[in-house]
Image 1 (cartoon, rainbow, N blue to C red):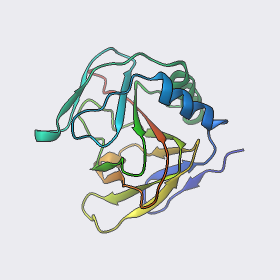
Image 2 (cartoon, rainbow, N blue to C red):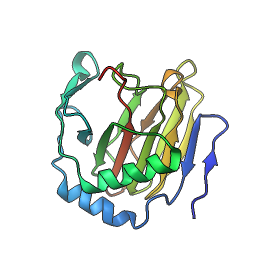
Image 3 (tube, rainbow, N blue to C red):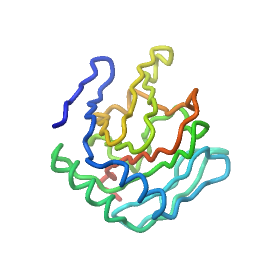
Image 4 (cartoon, rainbow, N blue to C red):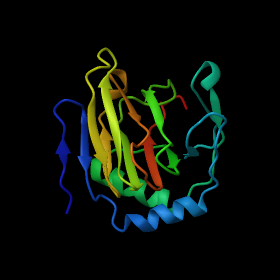
Amino acid sequence: MCIMIRMSTVPITYIPNFVPDPDVYLERFWSELSWVQHDGVPRKEYYCPSKQIPYTYGSGRGIRTYQPQPQHELIDSIQKSIEVHIETSFDVCFLNGYANQRDHLGWHSDNSPEMDDTRPIAIVSFGVEREILFCPIEDTKNVTKLRLGNGSLCLMHAGMQDTHMHRIPKAGYLCGRRVSMTYRGFTSGI
């Protein structure tokens, strides 16, 4: 049974234990995906869209282009579970692989013009529990923290990327592997 937690300070919904047997997913993703690590990016990445199109993210020194990777049966099955649960469809899944406490993700909003901001973004976490931080774009000192548990689902509500940023900081303790999946929708022009 899932318990939904809605946070009043940030437009998210958190559902712990959304995926049963999460350790099986962690091991399979870590060993079966052809992870990519771009120069200067402190984590591994995997881009898996429904339409076989590349995706360019960032600007300046941080710009990088992702090439479509093959769909994986577990990515599909989790996507279908989420879509049924929240009655929303998704077109793309980004996975981030964190090998240890040093791997992280800096402050950002998922506000690329190719991504549909009228749909939520679904984050599914596997492995070691890590914090995600949220803050309003206009008030970066007003930080809300949430610990993403193994097998959890965190929904960033539609429109949130216009008002908030988020990040996964380095952990202040020794920790093992984590895989984070983010499901999103493309805009209708893609």
